[in-house]
Length: 262
Ligand SMILES: [Zn+2]
Image (cartoon, rainbow, N blue to C red; front, top):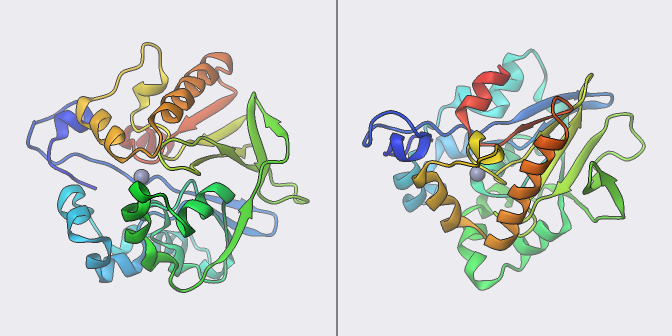
């Protein structure tokens, strides 16, 4: 997404230049198929940007290209999109769940609280879920997860694929949305924690924390619960201090983190 105001959003560059906001998605090769962590925008959004609503596209100016959809990128990596058996969502905002119709056979994993909010949103959250409705009109195969007392490095957690050797965990990080989750993926060495929209800029999880003012204002504008959001950012800062090298944190929208991963 390329909204105006690069300096206020990315913290460098011109005041009126286009900012760079990415949608960082993971593809995991698991034992029984592929797992996507978030989808970004989908091919339907590219063909019909109007379904994202005019206020959204006017403000955030998403660069909608087929080649950048998860569907295209899965193919470009040499995989069959039908082998994406699971999609694990941090939350269901349009820039995270837009690609759901591109993987109609996959099981879609979310926290029960996010699904509840989606089905019966409180008044001030209604617009958020109405914008995304086109992304689940086809009737995805939802799998909702509830906490059952498991713990991961001091956070509550639930295994997305119980019984499999693949360790992919939903970690509740509510605040941005009511059922917002981080997704922890066990790597060969250590863990990767995809924090979704729990923070937006890499300096927010460092000490001292810092965030460009435009990005800070945007997060406050779209948050479902500010108190929880700030608490969880504090816990992520504490995690990076406590586990140096053991856990790599990324968020959805920071271009520096994406460039670092590629
Ligand atoms: Zn987002």
